[in-house]
Image (cartoon, rainbow, N blue to C red; front, side, top):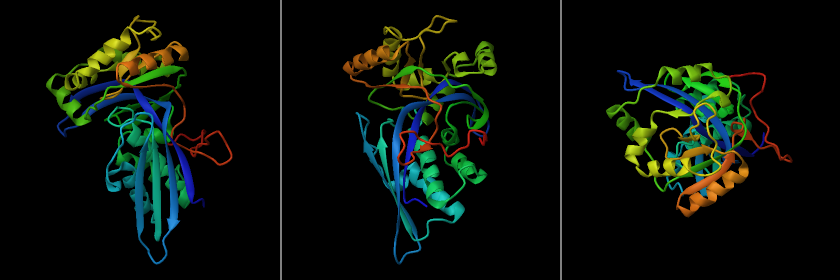
Length: 327
């Protein structure tokens, strides 16, 4: 068993997010379509044996890059810590060991890009490699689902339709390719606060939007939609400025059916994304956005989820068999 594992941990955007009414249990019905991105963090997970101890400890350190705000929280509060502790408990592993995790952070937090959930999925894959656990086991999927609604998606990657509370896999869509730009103002949006604002002024989902999602076979079939966006914009008005600014930038793709710019807030935000006609256009938009004082990055859509980076290879090999769809 290896003692050091490096894991690719991708971001995501929501191409479709339809929030339904609040149920008596306090949760909302949610339909979501997530797509993985080339923007990613990298986790280096190192296992060390501790002589004279039968305990298990985890230390998590984040190193922020490229203008991402540092995430300065205790290890115990990091979702990666929770994922590793849960895996150790479930599989009775890690006795007499210490695990040190370094997260090279390129995905901003509180942005609707799934960075924390992706890191948790990456940590679970690292645990599987370190302790010889089958990453396709139902126990691993159950751990992921118990940590957070988005975590199982990152074990899979690609593009997926999720129902129930936005946490139940329904079907995969053919992923798409092409560039996009992500822009985040210098503030985040609390998901809980966004839902409270939504409940104050709900936005319904039309039958046309519902049918589009139901009939879509690929990511490219979808019309971008997010009925949580207006609630988030009320909380953080600068999101309106970002959206309106993106809509008039040259090189932003337009929906062939509606003619509208392909611009959308991801999840509850605070990152807004736009599809671009070319990578050159994406680079130009990023440069202009940075002059506005915003964090901005260009990237592409990918089919990969969290993946182990194999030694002596520039290609990341997945732990999840392509033939077996487990989630």
